[in-house]
Image (tube, rainbow, N blue to C red):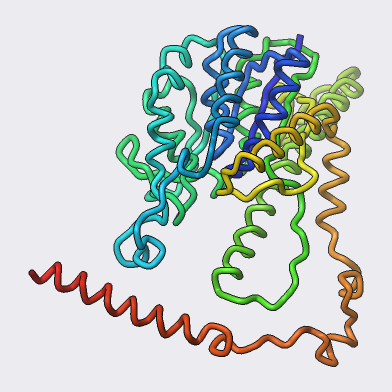
Length: 393
């Protein structure tokens, strides 16, 4: 019988979509996941689920996770705003928000027990990035600092502070790995019996849809441009993670097919030499059936912990999990999304219109925000003066 893994991406409040998908997979389909992996908000979901020993306890852990998500009344259940943080973070703050409410939730022994994690019989994998070393760290259920690593995995730079853990500072694993597929592959390979030919299965739960909606100018601020650039970079990592996993699977299948067809006869030694050139080959890598559960749209922003939006994302996840995409469907979808339009006319503006100045004229920054800039400079001068006085006195 194949082992089954679930992998959950990052996305903040969008993680409610993953929890909805889990309800169908765990409660309706009765899937008993042996490997549970996650990044950022996915690591929080994974941490809760991985404590369940056996199918019944897994369902109880899911029910507890669902109650936490659907019990959120507003963002204050997850983070707190810092006074003047948005103005002063460049000078003396490491983040805009404080994750204290989330940390209290993780520290609660009713929510997270190190003993339950170690005794569950499941393989847990979460990831975070070292701020000093820049390395990506895979953390399993036996690490005694798993709570701190989970908080670090959920700490988006600038929005939340890096977390001190195991002699260093760590932050959001999504910086280098939005969907921890490789960790799940390795964990499945570790627990699969030698000589087992039936492929394992992996359900990948994505908190955000593939692709990015086309945006329209004008770009009103540097922050808007920065947010757009981050969105593009994260989506690229997102897509590359999935395409790499599909490439590994196809390489393993091709290797085994060639091995089966060519191993007989006098050329067996030469065949083995040629097969040795395959980077992804059995038994170092195993064939895994991949299924993807992908939202059709954004149901909330990463920090929009609003009950109505969380419920909408949850319901969408449960519905989408009933018809997961198989590997070929995922591959075709990603290929289509990564093909640029043939011309700007597809987006509603032709090349000749661009040449004639069809793009909307952008008012000057001063005309739109001059009064705000003056007020902002005045406030900044006052704050700096107060800080200097406090230091001198």
